[in-house]
Image (cartoon, rainbow, N blue to C red; front, side):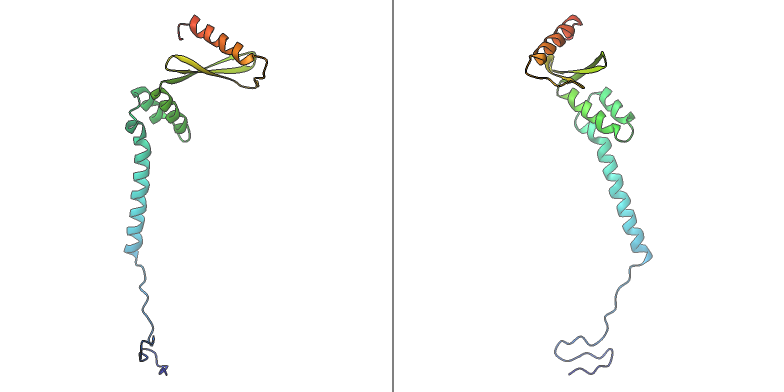
Length: 140
């Protein structure tokens, strides 16, 4: 069988000696660290370039650039809405906040915070009131 002496190979493909493990050196770790920094930098650049890639208006680009942290998500959503021709206007009255959604100059939706629309025709009534207010202001 085998000789049992370290470093002496065993005939017919036996393992014999110890294999030398290659250790990672300091330069290898530095190279990996540099690569991770470059990947992180590329991700940040891609995030900041999104408004330019989607061809947002200059105002929306400035809003995105000045937003901090998670506010960038809201600024990006606003930019997408404006690019698609959708805008929102919010009003507060008697402790309720009502948001009107406008798509390309046509009132398409209304959302009242703290109020559920039932089957009593409240939604159509509020939508008609929203159209009246927007028409009175010259926005519809």
